[in-house]
View 1 (tube, rainbow, N blue to C red):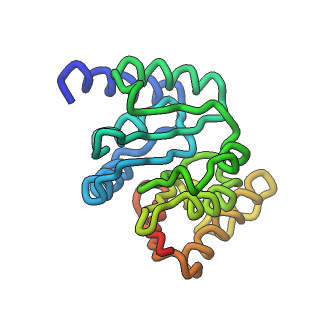
View 2: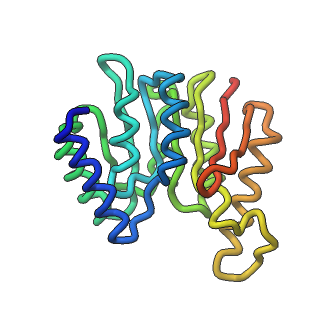
View 3: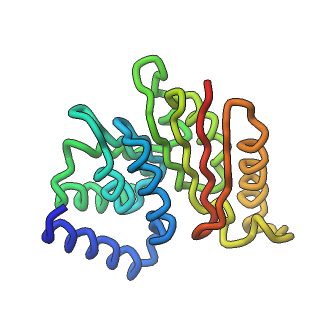
Length: 203
């Protein structure tokens, strides 16, 4: 990535922070970049685009002529910002952004025609269980599923039970339980950033 593109990427990050848009923490990004550099993915599925910051960073690790990132964003405003950022970086041919509700859109992807090497989940916390089942379905054998913010600002590890975030907190606790018990997965949850769960799919 040349100096001009690095400057654009830094501006995207600064703008997101200034506008309180949740993006990957530096330490979490560094961890994921290590995984991607080892995995050398050809196809990545991202659930939750925001402003496109993570997808742009992930694109550096794509391998192969037909390599691609498919990223899904429900928020129309974020979708347009991400689309513009991806264009600024000259990555229109590598990153396909979909403006849909991921819980519905994922069901339309046929696993016989499209499968992924890496699936990154960073969207509505209360929907992580739906995302997980689709991620497993759409994963190649030995694919890696990465879920960010599984500690949900510490609520998941505490005795948090307030009404406002109770459902999301309980579902994230269930997500962690399932990835550790599901025989299709080999998983670990790391105390990095706000909690990063990594699962290798064994079909």
